[in-house]
Length: 625
Image (cartoon, rainbow, N blue to C red; front, top):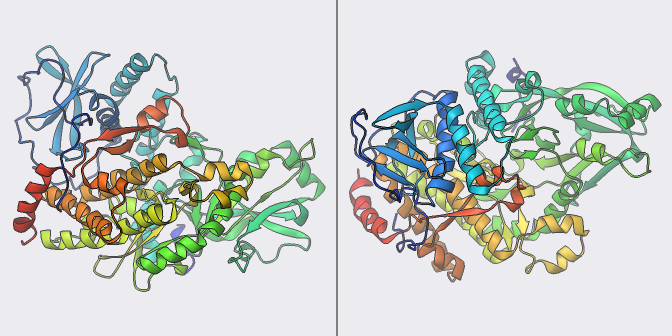
């Protein structure tokens, strides 16, 4: 893949779920609510309408996202929701509020598609409420439920609303148009990375961020940001770095080959540089000549979906940003810098095996990091600067990409709305049910088996959520390869890797592990609930009657893997229809927990006998069309 063009800058399924599993569309536990006299015309609860061709407003996006979270984590598990007459009814029992919203399509997993405004019952009528009121109701309900208040919550929801509003406005500008209409594979890939205007459907504040609002759009992927790095020359003895053995040539020095003798290049994210430039130790180093400001580089880098990871068509660079995005301050902790390179070394035998067994998949390695080891007053490296200027090198796509394929961010392919050129509705435009099912079968065969094999055969917990997977499609839009990325989320099962972990510093080894159960929950959540379910939903939007057959194909893919590999007990339970773990993003955010400490709610599995029976019938009729 060439460097970034500078012009860019201007389905059989299993047994019924356990009765104790929370069901998102369970009947309301209290007395049933009569249909409101002013209700809109009734529609059936079966899929009835395709996704709208236009994009929703920021008001609707924020409100629908909050409803998704409430349904999955609060009202659904407490049996305070129901689907009736083409609407979702959802009660906040402690706050004493009953809400209603129209459905354009229901979901077997409870991940329904909403349309229009949220309504609140007032006596015998329904009144529209806006996203602010819904956020206040959410805050009240969680305060009453937990006994504590989170005073940040409303501001974070408002920040997310502001970001979505700005992203929608930016998409009307020339930059977004130029990106989305790029003709080559790189432009299309970058456009997919930069098309996530709305973020995670099941996170209460997916686009919340701190930092100077005036600077945000200059570096935001949603605004099509492409910009040069800030180049610093640092005396060689003040550089902290590490490289894996397979990284034969330095991947950073190419960016500025004319660094003065005795210095090394340290590229910096320009936003981070502006936030740290007045740090007293940094200023003193500039005054002494230990650091030289070489100014902006010549190579433009595009912001990818994570905001802080940038790409020039050759190398991904994962920078620190002292900006809180969704949950976390997005900086590379010192143990994460060392951990990325250590994980690249440790995983090499396993990744080589997986690539040989599953040639349609590969992992992007992270073979190097570099940072600034400037001593503080106590003589040890200043941690703020070490972490603040840390950059992790991730190999680019060209080393792994199959010839003749176009890479697309999976999250962009699966988005609820067609926000970019890689959306599945564009890949499969005009496709009939048979081709959609063929596409899905090919996709699952690439995605699912290597993730399961990594866990069961190598004790590796991959994190294949939608933003960590790149799907590469051929000229017909069919999946040909999947690439996994971001070793920060990849973990080891300690019982399988005890000897190796013992050779690492404790502060590096500790964050690299999950116990077997937590690791399995993470795998199932990322693979099935986050990734497969959302991609399946986007396909079901094309042919609403297809959802049971699409889930049937998911189970068939897992069943095939199980039959060939001895069906480990955890996989047998999954095939039998045990509840699925869904990360509790709302409750985690409310309780201000680290992502590693996130809890899970349990969703009724779509691998149920009645679904299977329906799918077996539907697949014979539907897929033959």
